[in-house]
Image (cartoon, rainbow, N blue to C red; front, side):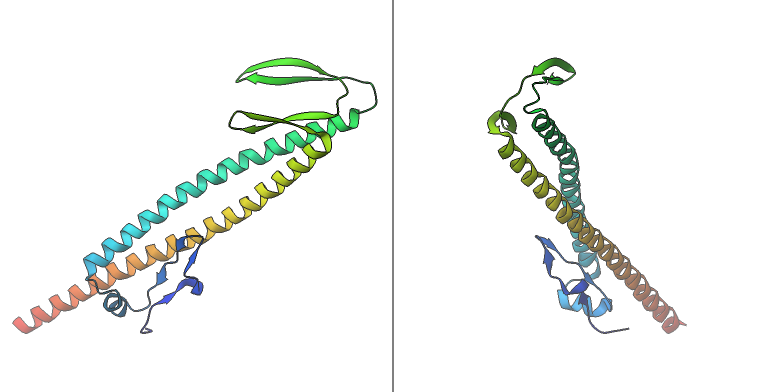
Length: 190
């Protein structure tokens, strides 16, 4: 066995998520952190719980982004449809959601502007070109955020696995040490 603990991929943290260190030699690990086996196991279990809390938060953010991206794409499609109908003199008939489960039919005449719901009870009017640019930028930002989030989740899952392996190694080392101690006690009594 090697005689030192090394960090996973030599990355101390990723966006505030601390990296777990892989333990090659449990005895050296325990002496480095200055804890006994039970305290080290408690520390590692606490770290594992922290990882789980962060994972739940990241998964919620991922779900939100995955729901947001189709909405932005749908808005882009609507603006593109309005742009395509421009100058044809043909009105656009559309059903839109007024409230949850309540829809209304609208006849949209040729218009040069659209209103975008920004959230927090804010709606702004934009020209079709500005609306397309804004929605395209929002879509790119959402997709980029989703990519970063997926990478963070993968990093976090790696840290969870490393921590679980470390817990098992420390526990197994402790069991092995107790058996050696018990065998030494019984052989000295005989």
